[in-house]
Image 1: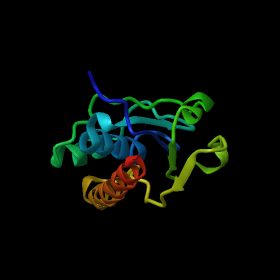
Image 2 (image 1 turned 135 degrees about the horizontal axis):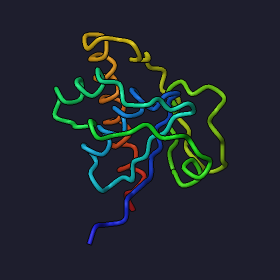
Image 3 (image 1 turned 120 degrees about the horizontal axis):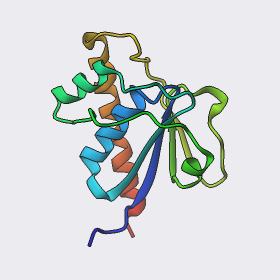
Length: 139
C-alpha cells in the first residue's frame, strides 16, 4: 500500500505543452508517490511540445505520453501548491493554497538548444520544491 502523498502540486502554464509538463515530469520522477502531481493549461495545446519531450528524454524523464489538459477550478481546489508559469489572470485562486509564480521562458516554438536551459531551471526549482514539501511534512 502506497503512503498518502505529502502534498499535491498543480503546475499551470497557458498551453500545458512545455514548462508545466516538464515540471510535472520532474516532480513525478524525483518525488515518486510522495507527491500527487497535476498539470494544466488555460488554453491547452493539441500536444506536448516535441522539443520539451526530447529535452526531458535526454535526462531520463519520459513525458511522451503526457497530454495537455484544461485548467479547472477543481484541479486548483484539490492542490496544496499551485505553481503558475505565465498563465496570466486565468488561474483561479482559492484561500489556503500555496501559490508560486515561476518566471520561465516559454519553450513554445523553440528548438532543443533553447529548451535545455529552461528544462534545467525547472529541474532546479522542482528540487527546491521537493525539499520544501519534505520539510513541511516533517512532524
